[in-house]
Amino acid sequence: MSKDKRKYSSEIVDGVEQAPSRAMLRAVGFESEDFEKPQVGIASTWSMVTPCNMHIDKLAESAANGVNSVGSKAVIFNTITVSDGISMGTKGMRYSLVSREVIADSIETVVGGQGFDGLVTIGGCDKNMPACVMAMARLNRPSIFVYGGSIKPGSNRTDVVSVFEAVGKHSEGAISDIELLDIESSAIPGPGSCGGMYTANTMASAIEALGMSLPNSSAQEAVSESKILDSLSAGEAIMHLIEKDIKPRDIMTKGAFENAIAVVIALGGSTNAVLHLLAIAHEAKVDLSLDDFERIGKRTPVLADLRPSGNYLMSELIEIGGIVPLMKTMLERDLLDGKQMTVTGNTLEENLLKYDDYPRDQQIVSHIDKPIKPDSHLRILYGNLAPQGAVAKISGKEGLRFEGRAKVYNSEEDAMEGILSNQITEGDVLVIRYEGPRGAPGMREMLSPTSAIMGKGLGDKVAFLTDGRFSGGTHGFVVGHITPEAFDGGPIAFIQNGDLISIDAESNQINLDITEEEIFKRKDSWVCPVKDEEGGVLDKYRSLVTSASDGAVTTKK
Image (cartoon, rainbow, N blue to C red; front, side, top):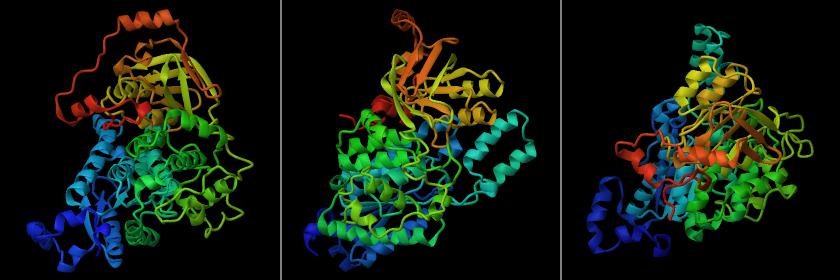
């Protein structure tokens, strides 16, 4: 086969001088004819660390079968994953966002070191999914992403968020020890990513809308024949991309990112999509900013009634056709750019032609003329509390404006203790700071405290703001990603108990009701309470990571 299909592997295996390389590869199963084929890396995020990824070894094998069936040579390799659901509420959660960078670095390292001509990545949990696409963007070799798939519903339509909220109910005495154990034991029935429009399903949908996965890859259950076939088809499709030399940056244009943002909004997706799409765009060398989310949000309605803010699970959306019919509708209303290239080698518009609309009697996705919300639930806020921006998730169910007095905590643990001991009451603005990318370090998610607030029945009575992140499972009146973060001396560091804070999701403002002079006075006397890390990856991360408003990346020039 010509070298133009083996741009990278030919350097590794061609010529007398590369006999040692070939000898090593023969030991892992290469035959003589394989050295003439394009080599395709299959990046598997399989592990027993989390149910999200425990089945991905089977998907990797299926993708490899697809690669091998079309005249390429598959090589499976692994990378790590960290489970947010398991580490949530602990110091271990500091490693979650860090893992995104480690995973992207590891995929880049293997593909670059081994000279693969193409790449299939398979991700199933919140951080390994954007990490896979970040690595694809960096490497810019023909690539396809495969989503590991969504979990089946637990008993009585429960999921992982049900367990977190049950903790709050238990602290109120609303449920017994036995009832909590019953929810804990039945909410997560097997493999797959968390079952609402939480971060994993949000990012899977965004990546599909971005053009980097096959149609409806985002809307398949983890344990299903369709997901096995999706993996096989991805493996088969990579050869076409190699032959046509279609690379990730040919697909991930500014228009493609705008499509992804619009789909995330229509689905009522996670705030983490803002952070991750900014990071992917950075690696793809696309100029994307918080202002793009605000601009697209003004014209894009929320249409899907999905958890956490809505009622339905991802498995129920899958039953009615997934996200493809939604994208068809959005395309017809000029809310998407159908001319964008995808990994099929066809445009988004061409991909959508063969798919049916939703069933007429379905209740999950609203008609575009009768939206759940006429504009975005993801609000980009500015003001004296967030001069560089903040990201709010405001569905409208909790209202569009909140004003209250601050209750300030310098860590998630302190805040959780305060919530469970009834220190938070109606009208409070709960502030958790020093949880940003550099402060934590690692920008922990606040699912435990927000779920406890919900479990206590305060979801529409309390506002919540942080320089950390929120889980895709979070709902309520919440504002995260506040920049500059407290660790860097941002205004959130100077809030005191009892200060009046106003949040307005119509004017997109977040402000502390004190004078500029008082802010400067407090800044002059401020001493950062966060201790230095004692070496290791967290210390390295703190020294490299950028602001959340820039995607919290570690490769910024």
